[in-house]
Image (cartoon, one colour):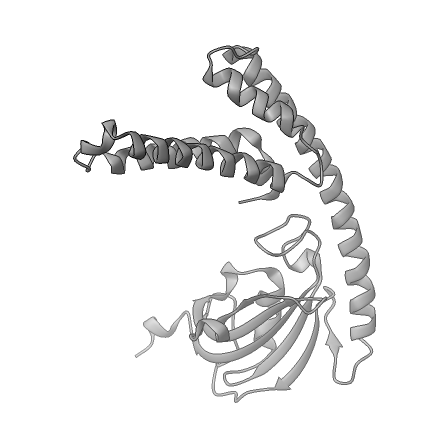
Length: 255
């Protein structure tokens, strides 16, 4: 879920409603004998309050860097709604929450823009220093790489974008934080090369089967200005890649 969706009050309460519906559906399987038991009703009422409290707590915690809610007003709204005395009708409620979402989205957009600029600046400085290291080379596009093992070339083994490659890899940010690793998953991945980010499409053919390479990929050859999973916007990416196998795209046509 993106940061904007996490901060959306409407989205969070929709998720809450769905989870409550699932809870109600599972309850249908019970016999219903306890529904008039005072202790059971008391415990269930408290549990419902806890569920609502957790959902509200999630909203408050997720948005605490942007807005500090008035807890007394939250409780007042709950109590008045339960008593059928809410000061807001459905239209007013929707209007207030939509306005809140818009305000939050504007703040988040501003922060993301600043983060993107900071990441771009830090990435450029990192690449400048990395380029000075022994064995580091660069391409016209700005891709930086260091070949640790060239691998073994055989026949037409040079990797083409339409080939399918099998690799082990580790991906990191410039602060050393790992965002992905086939090694940790315990198995390599296999894919058609031209389905990937430009930095991989350009970088993997620099080695042969059995080769190892470290790629430092600028944002324009990676995921660009948009955040992707655990990768912030305008991130410079570091990949350590081991090319295990290559399946030529034209192999099926050969005897």
